[in-house]
Amino acid sequence: MTLSHFDPSTATVAVVLALTLMLAGAQDTQAAQAPTQEDEPAAIRDREDALTKAAHARDRVRLEQLVAPDFVLRGAPDLDRAAWIHNAITLCWGDRSRIDQFTARRVGDAMIVGFELTFYTDPVTCRPAVLRSLITDVWTRDGGEWRLQLRHAAAAPADGTAVMTQYALLPESPPPLEVSSELSLVATGGNTSTRTLGAGGSLTHRTETRRTRLAVAFLTSDSDEVTLARSLTAQARHGISVGSRANLFGEALYARDVFAGIEDRRTLSAGAAFTPRMPRGQTLSVESSVGYTAERRLDEDLRFATGSGALAYSWTMRPGTTLTEDVAFIADFEQANNWRSTSITTISVTLTRLLSLKATQAIDYRRTPVPGFRRADFRTAAALVVLLQRRPPPP
Image 1: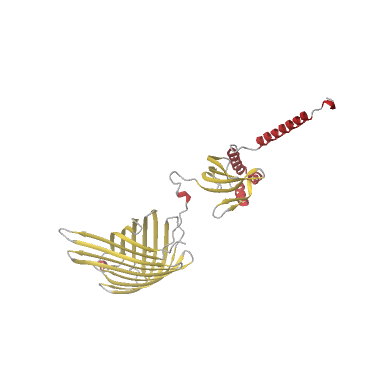
Image 2: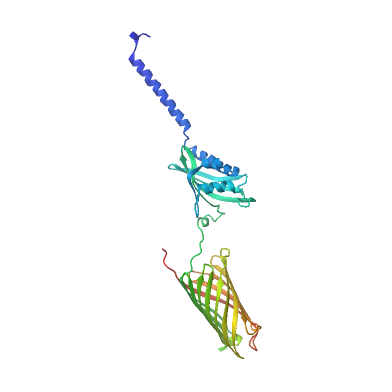
């Protein structure tokens, strides 16, 4: 082609066509290189698999590539990146794991991932075990690569327990003021008219370091309108906390037990109690004390120094149902054979916030009883209990 036949419009068309082809090619290349949203869940699943494989292989380099610099494992307390990677490469994770129920969705610039992760080795003991955890991960892009930003892990729930695993069951602080009263009644009619009436009540006041309790119990038994026997017990006790599991206490006790030939008994004592750690739902208190007792019996009056030990156990078998056992031993420092012991077993079932049913089996044993009376008394009662509590308003 010579200059005399050059057509400017033809050249312009050729240039435009070439630029269009170049732009189209560049867009195709970018589209091929950039993953689509449909590909992102699969890419994240590959990353999760890579994390578990790196833990099995204890591959620090690979873990550092996959985990973001400001990674956090949410917990109480939180675990930072360095501690999490240290655990991944030093504990035993075995050579196999499994990911189930994997889901992933994009929220803004992040991928929210959920799945069940199962390992088959105890990381602490390195023994065979099945450990299943419900994982929630947050992945974000860093330099064009998906990296793990945040993780939360919890025990995978058993069937029907998904709601309860979302919450921790914390012990409720006891109320500052508590008032309870109870009433039991057994009556018969016909050839013989009998009636046994039991009543009791208590008042408890608590602060952070102190606890004061007043209690009274009354029991009477009548037959054909004739009173056979009565008993009355009144107790006052004040305790002061010494540390988180120990307390010092002082106690005053008055008792009248015609069932056993005791006109009245007055006791003053002081001692210490300790509460060891127990499994959740169970409590145990161990106490020891020394005191002085003045007792007026049908046959004689006694005054003697005493030493005592007691155990108080409580087990919440299920919400609203509690079993308690109180055992005490009292020694007479002046007459070794004048020792006594008591055992009170109680099971209570909560009906409403205010009402509960209580069944009690009590055993009182006296090594040296009043002449004409037996050594042991057994009392079985079922009572309706009313409980009133005053709690501070929630913060």
